[in-house]
Each structure stands twice: as C-alpha cells, then as structure tokens.
Length: 451
Image (cartoon, rainbow, N blue to C red; front, side, top):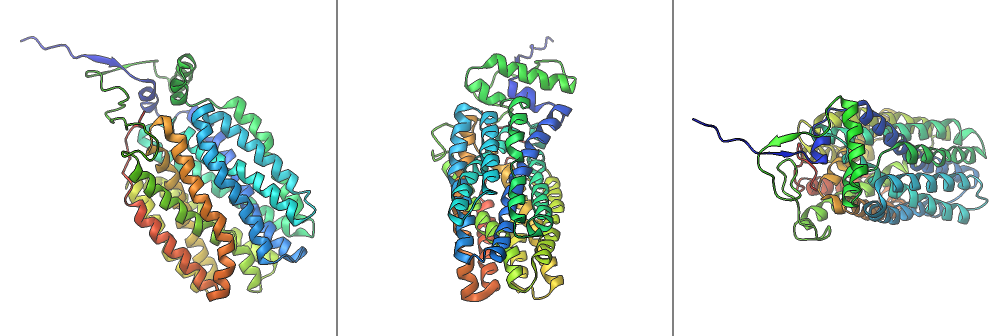
C-alpha cells in the first residue's frame, strides 16, 4: 500500500523564533531591555525619597508633595498611550531609545530646579518618557521570546524593576538623606538613562513582526537568522501539514483587526484596563507615600528610608515566584493569586503598629504586588495581534496611569479621614477588584503570539 505524501509548508519567521531555545542573544536582549527597565524604576523610586527629603528641607506640604508625584504620573499616562501608538508606527526599538533619552535628560535637569513649579514641570516631562518606555519594552521582548517560556521571560524583564527600586532606595538612603542638597545629587544620578539610550538604539534588534508589517522582509530575515545562528539552528525549516489560514501561527487563529475595542478584543481590553487601573492606584498610592508616612509616624529620614529599602528587597523573591508559577499555573491564575495576596497584605500593613509588623507586612505587600506586576506585563502583549500590540499594551498602561495620577492626592485625604488603616483598606479593595478582573482574561500560556 502506498502512503500519500505529507505536504509541508515553510515555517514563518515568527515560528522560527518560537522554536528556538533561550540563547545568548536572547540573554543580551533581555539584559539591554532590563537595564532600561531598572533605570526607569530607579527614577520612579527616587521621587518618593525626594518628596520625603523636601518635606524636611523645604518644608513642603502634602498638597505640593502630591503635585510633584502626580505631575510625573500625568506625563506617564500620556506617554504610555502615545508610546504604544508610536511603537506600532515607527518601531519598538526606536521608541524605547527615545523614551530613555527624554526622561534621562529631564531627570538631570530636575536636579537644578530652584522651586516647586519648575520641579513639577520637569517631572511631567520625565513622566512622558517613563510612561512610554515600559509597555514598549515588554512588547519588544515578547515578540522575541520563545512561546514556551515567553511569560517567564517577561517576568524576568519586570524583575529588573526590583533592582532599579532597590538602587533608588540605596541612593535615597545614602544620598538623598545626606543633607539639604542630597536630593539634587540623587536626581543628577538619574541622567544615566540618557547615555544608555545610545546603547539601546545601536545594539538592539527591531521586532521581526513589526519589520514584516512594514514590508522590510530582508531586514526581518537577517534578524531571525542571527538568532538562529546564536542557537546553532539551520535557517528556515518546514512543518508537516497544509498551509493554515493567513495569519495563523502555531495553530492559533488570528484575531480580526479592528482596533482594541473591536468585538473580538473588547472584553479582554476592558478586563486589562480594570487590572491596570486598580494595581496602579494601590501600588503608587502605597509605595510613593510609605517613606513620608514613616517620617510622620516619628521615624527620622535615615530610618524611614532604611525600612523602605528592606521592604523593597522583598520584591525579588516575589518576581522569582511569579516567574516560576506563570508557566506552571498560567498567566491568569498567577496574576489573580498575587493580586489577592496583595489585598491581604495591604490590610495587614494598615493594621501594623510596631516596627516588626511594619517590616513584615511591607515585605509581604512588596512580594505579592511586584509578582503581580510581572504577570501583568507578561499577559498584556499576548492579548493582541501584532498590528495593535503596542497600541493595546500602551493604552492599558496609559489608562492605569490615570489611577497613579489620582493616588498621590487621594492618600492625604484618606489619612485625614481615617488614618493609615482607611488608606490601605482602599488599596486592598482595589487589589481585590483587580484580582476579579484578572480572572476574566483569556489564558495564553504556551500559545504563539497572534499575527
């Protein structure tokens, strides 16, 4: 009996990337993106220490403190949305480098601010760069990571946030708290991203999927071959079976493209926006104010900053746990569990009335909250097709930044109305709502990105 020949089709470039192991070239790209991510975190983290220092040295009130913090978040809301749109039009790498340059220069200029008004304006410009960088970086890395470990790779990327925040805590403790001009030197260090932007622009590849959409197929092929060579894999390849429908990759049907609010995408967009809004409200409401709240409870600047540094270190095991669970339990369950843990930890911190309780509850909040951030950044780019992936992730981040804009003003009101317990009870409720919304998102573990 004669066996009918099996038809074969060539692998798409996306499939060729998905079949690769994690190579040295992936590692270099993760490191380059991660350093940018860490510098971003350092800049955001420094604000909380600068605000606490200015309350002592300039005797600024809660209203002015809130304006300084919120100006940056207003910029981040706009930057995230515009950055995503630009990433789908001029490329992920170009936007990533541009954002590093913008916020690095603006942070350095902030060190020279002679008054609150100038500082507020410069923090807004800083926010434009910061807001655009994060969703663009996660989108770029998602489009190169092999699908079987894509979620874990993005959590690794997000884990660089902990390194940046720890660096901010170290700078805050030993530089910002060193004297009346310490905060200026702390911000001057924030110029590092401007220099690093040149490294990013010259050393990182552009997204293969973006290049194909732009018709730059020769450049896309060259990038794929470089990754294949790094893995010791022969270029090209084929799989058994008839060609699938146009746009299908790895058996995953392509979503119809009609914007992120099309019928096929609107439910996931709504769920993602709710998670982004609630996690921003609670994270920035808590962590921007923790150093200042500790000072108000009678701790001096050095002790307050030291407590914050200890709490920040707990982010690292949180990321490690999320990186392991995201490929074991999946994105949806991991995100939901860590958000629920964040809600319980926020209640515990609100009730904390001794130094050991403050540190223990703060560490738990840091562990669960940042693990949730890692899972969130992993799941976002997977929800959208290539043509709107940057737009989808950027718009969700931009909407979330509205909450981070509100949070600095909300916290003083809550503290006056019901003390620290009321403030952290509100954060816990927001985390719980985010957990419910996260559970509505589709599970994408092991699936190829939709073209």
